[in-house]
Length: 327
Figure (cartoon, rainbow, N blue to C red):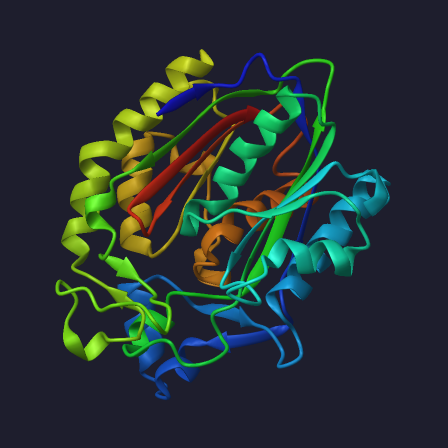
């Protein structure tokens, strides 16, 4: 589904991110020096970040939120809503957003949003609808912690992911700077990428040895879904925005692995020099990836006010999300 956001008077007022200090190298993942070349070849990752034992997902999200508010020169009391995409959250219940609200010192409603890698984009879509009904300042945050515990039966799956958090402040504006977006779900592939709860029944389509563990099915399925659907979704979002690919200044495309990123980049059709690539430094930080990358490139000057931005993400569910906006 493609959405027209042009009538919603909203803008990205500030960005922020937080990456833990600890760096995990490829050699640490498999315990062998020669694994570095293997992981670089198959996935494209070189290193990723990992939280300390004392850090919860809510903690790293709050660190990103504090940087956003500092940049915007606002207090937590100025917020109308907090939207959080956490993988995994602090608890099954309550929502991680409640914990973030408390630790941040805010008093507004706080809501979790799922959708895996697409969760932050879904949160932006939700926030825009809230601004359309009168709210003025909304934090849209995402955080990922995959380094704790042992959910991965296959060490190569562990090598895909890294920890981190990021987000933006969406603010009511004199004119709308979000042009279009889209959310898309193809639910028949729900068990191609899964991380079950402890009480989840085991899908008969998943090998029994992966019971209770992270599972990623045949890559060919993911490539086929991207080839058959993603290009048309991107084209629809750009047409709704009234922009051509040549008018996009910077593109952020989800990087779950180098091969899948390459497939998505082909579907986007944006010149490579305009596409941000940082997977080798951080791995796949799930829904936190896009806001982390946006913040880094805003602070480095790569993204400037007035730039036309395309964001594309996809992942478990099988879900996809697109945003087209002016920074």
